[in-house]
Length: 123
View 1 (cartoon, helix red, strand yellow):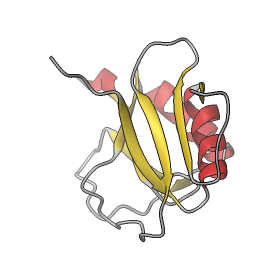
View 2 (tube, one colour):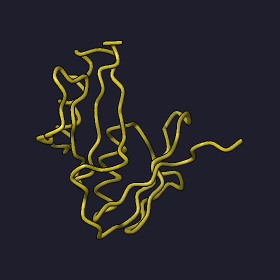
View 3 (cartoon, rainbow, N blue to C red):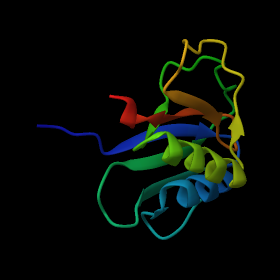
View 4 (tube, rainbow, N blue to C red):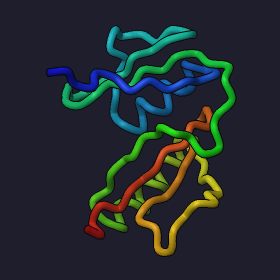
């Protein structure tokens, strides 16, 4: 059976993106280094999928078909994580597709890639 090894995201500045995601997720470079055009980050504790970053000149999609969902256990943790991620360089996205009373917050990383922080405590 196959499994997800890495999730691949584009970045105009791979080193900047690797710095953000390393700090955001407590990931480390798999091979101990980050190249100008490619990096594979893995969980520092060894558990979970990797995140690969490849140099890309393609514009960021306003409504991406694929994105990361980061899980928080409740609303308080979600708020704390949104604040922490923004302190690392993420930006809040003015998301036009929010439902009433959303359980997610849409952010963009340092490269503009969209991702969500989900309050999983709502059930």
